[in-house]
Length: 494
Image (spheres, rainbow, N blue to C red):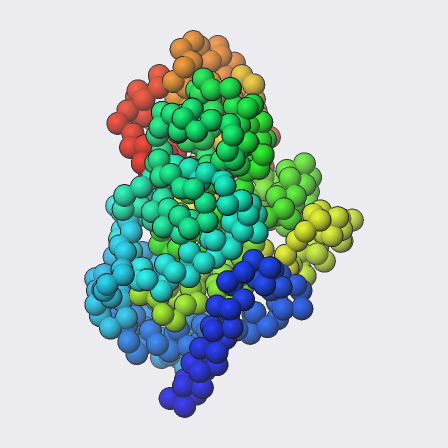
């Protein structure tokens, strides 16, 4: 108890110091220095110990969870031995109230968010005023560091209502600019730009496919507008970024999850440069990330989160906030990826003749997070996995497809004669009515491009011919795309 009281006192002092530092972007930038990273890691370990101690004594669900997992039965009680939380063994087993500290939902000031349901039935997540205030402060700091424009109009096109991202963006950024919450409605976005005109700078938030679809179909002359894009909810390829940069001055992605919180990590000038380098240098991408197709790459504050991969390459997250409503300790989001320290990344790049200092003029020494995508959002086919990011890259890099396709879905099918086929459903853009390509040419194009973007797919093609890839083209919002809910993320796995 004395040890815990001491740790809590130290953490409280560090929390006050962090509050002071994080009130101003210029102060917060001091933490970017390499000399501070060992201190931030030490703080993270201390905070993780205190959160675990509190959860194991004051959270009914976590107490039952530790008992069910026989934690400590073998005498190992270190942080690395703490059992891993998942939706299956924790969220779906215990009630929302039991998952909160004290066994009840804190009130007032509490918000209940709902996940989009992209991986199944939507779940609900409780966030109290303290953690929302913390997220708000970091979002505002990021805005100050990246944009710092009091006259900017912020157009929030994320889904509104119970979904976490849209509402939190609106609540967090209403104080730093002129905010309009639109939701994923292209007509309202276009009407807003028409109403206020090109005399303002616009920061547009939204899902990557929403912005892509809007740009494909807009009738506005966007060359007159000064716009920046902030995307999230899913990854985007460098080809899609190049497409967005034809209209936006910048296109930056933020990483988060309804299960955890928004804005855990953000793309920086450095991470974008590394990803673009790996996009061209497949050998370097293979060395750094184990795949020729580079993942999304972000940076995060190592004092706020401990992020670690398990043996299967799935990311485990510990939210280092003592005053949150419900603990998230080694929570498995089922995202595939890993982390690097800035120092380790510098060393590996140097071994390949790349100076990290030359990749970006301004850079932080915060740790690196890379994310390949959701582990349960891929299609298995002849032993390889076909990811939505592979198809997105193919569509956006080919002039025969870009602008003509609104969305897609993947499905692995076994026919009555036990023959495996990869079904790729393509949805025509709203304004495109013609034939995209001759069906055989379309199939051949996508087959060849899948081989180009995925080494695994290229290897397994030794086991089948091109006829095992079937392309099904549907009109806009027809076929498997009918009845789509525009408020949530696109469903890429049929």
